[in-house]
Length: 205
Image 1 (cartoon, rainbow, N blue to C red):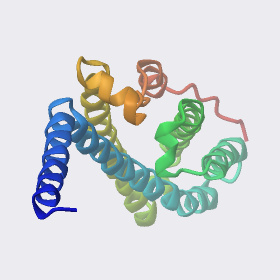
Image 2 (cartoon, one colour):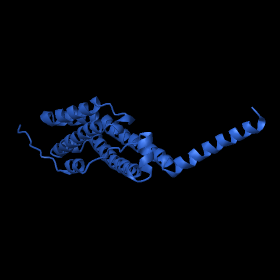
Image 3 (cartoon, helix red, strand yellow):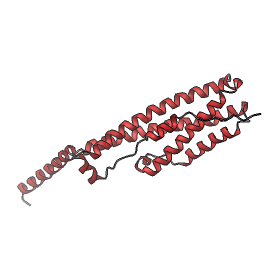
């Protein structure tokens, strides 16, 4: 092959690569990649905070149990709710499966409700409220709940930005070609359920 032809072929190859890069960038490919990574990072932080809460629960249950053993039903609900959360494999891929995401979200909501009931019951035991270990655990749980809220809000914002890019023209064409799909977010119904005050019935001794 003549040298001139090889040079032209090489130049056309570089031009093709450059043109493809510009085309993909202009159609939102880089934006989709960037926003997808932001979602993964935000979701990892959500899982991290949920795990931190789960790790605190056994000590909390044992502490409350020492002062309020008759509240067995409430303690059992917390333990069972934690077990249900632990039975769901919380992986980064969970955000690509709406059904699995909804199941995870429901389990976390049940655990939040069970913990709320447990803390309300604890208020009825003065000795428990004065226990330093319980106060420390309660403070850590409250701090973790705040971190969960922040992490969830960041995830929601990241999903909103990404889903908008996936749906908008012309980036929606790029999304279809490369398999970028809409990702699930936390629902309003979930937030309403978590915010609802728990109903607690105290057992008579």
